[in-house]
Image (cartoon, rainbow, N blue to C red; front, top):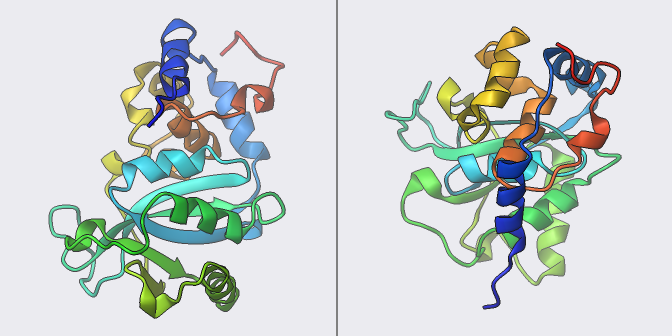
Length: 225
């Protein structure tokens, strides 16, 4: 397979010219973001939730992300007492910018639907949160010659989503101290960081994904606190 130099170049660029932002930019970006009442929400599992949380957060039209547990019967699961739940991630998105079908495309490009890992924690699963999502999902599978019962990927109705522990939320972003310092200065706690639109983008940025956040940041206070 031919080596793609772009991820390495992006990582080098971040080392040479790391992104800087102010507390005011953080607050203003999130203030301008679409309200949760206007977004749609999709829930998926494709292995460890850290990677897809960052990957999908970088997508145009995705407003918020969060990771957690779903698909099982245990009440109040935790990372160390997961029971029969699976690690999943939620994507809040603007349906006028990115369609549910686009998210499905990304999910099915990210795993082999004919294969399923034995360990429930990391299984591939697509949850239909609404009847409309299930209809789109069924049509999506049909156009690919697939059926919900004929693939390894679990296709289920979402019953409940349990948010994961704070240290799992925006995991890649939490490793960048300069950016985390800006959120701390802005007065963001763990809940605010989890639900922050700009944190979703910066989590993707920290993982090496392309994000257009520079063009969207407020410019009136660059270089100020």
